[in-house]
Length: 469
Image (cartoon, rainbow, N blue to C red; front, side, top):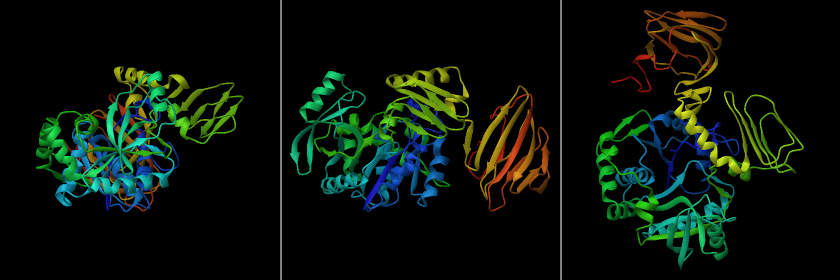
């Protein structure tokens, strides 16, 4: 049996404005109806696997848990206190499996944000990799290049070893002429960042080549705590861990690295042009999602989230509309979207962090209107969910129930508010909101006051562990 280990970190900044820091691309349905994280798990159907081990960060923990719950298979969610690259992240998973299963636990390490269009071909290379990994090899999957790509690192294959090749060398992203020579030679593959090995072998090689990483991860795993669906490692120990990738820390140094060719319609969807590549197109090469009209345009990607988007006479253009931002870009310049994201971050704009829809463990809210002393939100609370017991120093709140039933705590009183009814929470009053029903609770919240920031929340109780200690 195989243990999928899924790395669900990353910000996906080149896919802004759909991908945001607090809700990045791996949690979005960019290719098909499932999110990319969910597709990473469901494409393993037919392979004998255990429940997944997902490596996430604090910011995304509730999103990961919710999306796994939707699949009916939670698995294990390990939280990194801070990103330290892929070598430590996989070490945490390997140590977890070593403790619960043993050194022989067979790990299939995957990124949560890749597209693989031919699942059967993917299953075949997993089957080819299994005996090699069980024999102590560190297997990586090399993508058969579709052309001279300058955005990927490459792996040069060495001597044949069954269905695989010894890794000759890892090479950095090349220029176009060098990439073409790699493709022409037939000896090079794109570096996919996917691996298979046993927990014990990975930890042994990590200890041999990067003992500081192994020591820090072992120390952090020696003092773990379990919080709801999550495994929390010791923060102080983990923050002392060096930052390094699997490639640099282990794969480039070990003599046990082998590569298996994979030709399965793979993409890391690292840009809008890459997303255009992997999606179905009309006769003019256009990809459209949402309410879109296209006229006399070719090879465009148009994504409409809320409004009708009409495109006339455009070629090789990306258009992405969301509730709070619109991107229009030349398809050949989409790598520069990251520059816009960096500028948004420098200006401390909310569009860098999150969408107008903001997701919380209890549901979500949509900021409908904002003014100098007021803010209007549409709030959705999942059945059985409860917001924290809290108060605000600077704002009052009016709640109007649109559908469902709310259990409201307002100071010393607790009462029900049903459809078309409302209640008022004065400044400084301790309050809480819960959905006791079986259907989602929808309500409109009108905030008024001198300061309306999300940091004006003092939590006293919270079932999701968000009370400051």
